[in-house]
Length: 454
Image 1: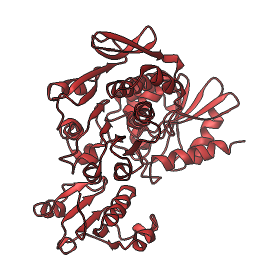
Image 2: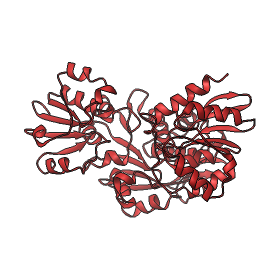
Image 3: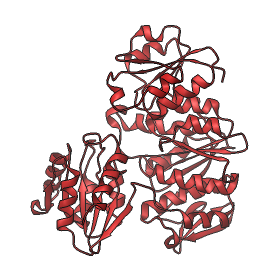
């Protein structure tokens, strides 16, 4: 990709925007970093960008900003369809950071997307791919926190890239292509931005839009929306299922993870040999194993890697056991479907939930809460609706506690209520932006408070 002496505008001063700006500058471009938030420097240090020779423009973007631009790169948080970008896009290419990454990539890309389970599956796939490409030839990036463009630039043609891909990243992507992709599930999320489930799903399906039979697509057979994608894909399809035996694909048989492919049954390992627990992690493991197997993975090496794979931070992460009560950080559960996976893993739960409410349906959430949660502690903006829905679904008002906007108070309440064999579970079913900069900050704050308990 030739950017030498070209004017490149990067929109969005976040992790991926910073990386794209620095990389474009390294490739010889004249780069401007723009963010609509005039106070962005209160959160982010822009000094390294200025030192690299990147011009910073803060405040509302105008047409003058884009005069002479030959490329616009936008961060995932920036909607592609805002008026200024729609207008500029008629004259200048407007692409996502992951599209920029794809254009730089020399190695094949294997993508993981879906509403829930992406991060665990991506990290596991990255480890499994090391058994195929070697420990130093695998890049892991994207929505997982490491900018994809950095990894695509770093990894040579003899390696591979494992990418966690979100629907936001696909909005401004049209050429992005993968050698293999896994789609885990599609449930209501991000509808404030995408408006409809069909639009949301269409963004997910872009990961296989350019596939041929030489490319691989791993789909969740148990999820109706993902199963139906096989009808629209030109890929070689491999289904996975945690609930039934498949004629071909990855599934559980006699308590073991197995892959049946071209008439041969490959036994990987026993489910209870994995360190990552819960039915959702069985699905995640099956998806990652299927994609790595199709990429040439050796089943014995993959089995050993899977047995050694530790839980991901913020996803049913054990924090501490105190007085016989174990505290779990599941801050990454930013929607009810993700929280359901964690709640379904335990019995007798003291649950901390609430936050920046996505206003998604809570029927299945409260079906599980009624069955497994002894006390419900609510925090943040979502507390009022979550309490209203709890009462509507027959959950006892006596078992609902409210901690306002204080995680300290929520943990204190949980500590006072919990008795072995109960567990304390932070699984908010909401985003975090009413109280924190992201789910990572929320999870780390929870862990800090728990570790300070006497």
